[in-house]
Image (cartoon, rainbow, N blue to C red; front, side, top):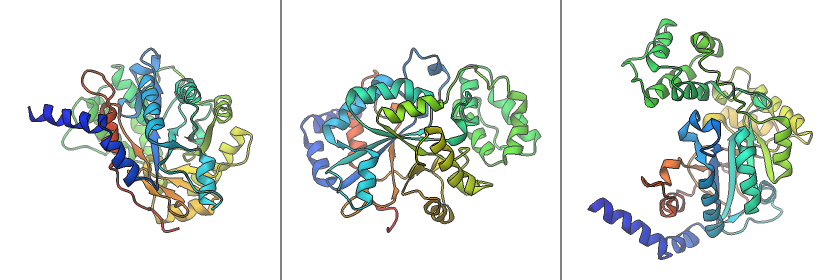
Length: 343
C-alpha cells in the first residue's frame, strides 16, 4: 500500500505542474546534458543481442524528446561553444542531447526521430570503430551471452587459466558476466586478447554494429554534431598512448568527416585524471564531457568540463511498459548542480 501511495504521489506531483514549477525555478540557469548510447526498435535484429543497460527503445526516445521539448530549451553544440567563448548566453533551462560510441543504430533510428522533432544533438565517435562491423569487446560478450553462445563459467575459467582468477566465482548471469568484463578491463590488450581468443567465433554475430564514414557525414548534415570518444575506447588513464587517444583521434574523426577536427570529446567509460584533463586541452578540445551525474551552472561562461545525466530504460518505464515522465522528472529535475572545473 505504501508503495502504491508513493507512486500515486509521484504522478500527482508531475501532473499538477508542481515538479515543473520546481524545475523552472531551481534549474533556470543550468545546462542539462543527456547521455544516450544505443537506440533500437524491437524489430531490429540487433535488439536481441544489445546490452539492455545502454539501449533505449526507439519509441521511448520519441517520448523523451517530447519531454525535453516540454520542460527545456534544447540547444546545439554550437550554442554551447558560443556560450563558452563568451559570444552568446545559453537560454534558461538549456538541454543538450548526446550519444556515445558511434553506433550504426544512431543513424538508423535516432537521426530520423531527432529530425522529426527538429532537435540537434551531439554524437561522440570512437575513431577506430568507424567503418568497422564489430563493437567493443564488452558488447560482443554481452551479445554472445544473450544469444546463448557463451556461458559465464567458461569465460571465468579462461580468465583463471590465464592467471586472473575471480573469487567467488561469478554466477552464470548477466550480472556475473559484468563482473568478468570488469576483470577483463583491467588487463592489457594483449592479455585480454589471449583470454578471449577461444571465444572469437561466439563473439561474432555477423551483424554490422558501428557507424560508417558515410553515415557519420549524414548525421553531421542532419543536425547531429560529431565529437570524439577516444581512438580505441580505452579508458584514458589506462591508455598506453594518450596522444593517440586524444590528438590522433581528433585528427582521424575530422578526416572521416572531411571537415575541421572536432572541438568536443567525451571520456570513454567516463574515466579521466588530472593529467588527462591537461592533455585534453593541449590537444585542442574546447569542451570535454564526463559521466558525472550533475547539471552544469551557466551563469557567466559554462565550464569546459561538463557533467551528463544518463538513465536506463528500466528507470523510465513501469512494469506495464508505460513511459513514466514523472520518474524521469524526479531524476532529472533534482540532480545536483555543480561546476566540474574552475575555468
